[in-house]
Image (cartoon, rainbow, N blue to C red):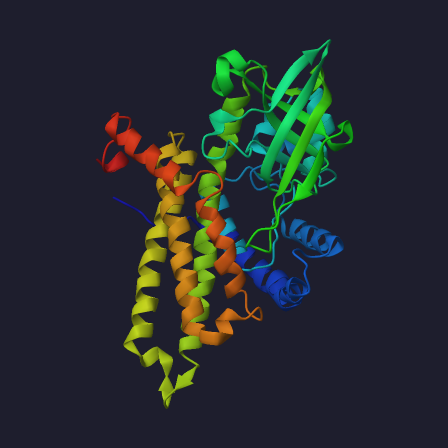
Length: 391
């Protein structure tokens, strides 16, 4: 028997998050959109801290964080349900108590200096892999770390780094053995900003979240700042990227669901030529297509998370989910904006901001082309079967 029902626990958690979003986050949208119109891109810090404290009162702290660090250690499917609900608002917010998944491989001293303060919100890190000449081809990184006594000196440039301009430390993937290449000769380093690296924000078409470029010029890093093993950096990087793909898919589902809801509501209110626009077949078909694509995307996103929970290799399912969901959300936002007409094109509503912001989802953490490469390669090499686990 096949069961598509949520468990009672999953439903309770989802409904609690939904209530939190409705009560605490959605009322902030008007002020947030005003800040965006005035050139801002995020809520004031004190408002972010207030929201996280309120969320902690609700019991949401460290969704993926192991219980030994005070987190909830929720399954991937449950986390995806939460990300879907959070994504329904344009206000940039995520629950606290989180740290990059690869930080849990830190040694005891590193956990005290980086992991635990990050979980508590006392420190902010960023993950620095992408370079001007190494985007989809992460194996082409050229940032280099050379030995200098017991230390390492890092030189190079990273680009399109999320939180790169705000972070006080970076997890930097750098070559330590050029002869072995990135896949076997790269290492992850924990590098404090005070060690000497600099950052510059990058202006993009999506005004809500601006990445940054990072510059390293013989930045000195003690040997004790190596994360994991020397030469094991590429494997850590792929583990970090892998988690991002199913989380991005869930975000796409949440954004699309909110946009479709707005479109349906508006189509039932807006009148032209003496009748509601929802009575026009052109509008009905946009709504129908959006609902169908959204439902397909929802199951692809949850299937990828389900693979994670059951301990299967989730790379194939995550690639399918990211490829489809990121394209789907762009189409749904576009239709919702079209249904709203001129009002949808203004900055009074979140639609135009989402229209620009979601375009990046088809690029970062694996472009469409990379996902297609993964999917076709898996099939052609026999690593997976058409039909997956049901084949």
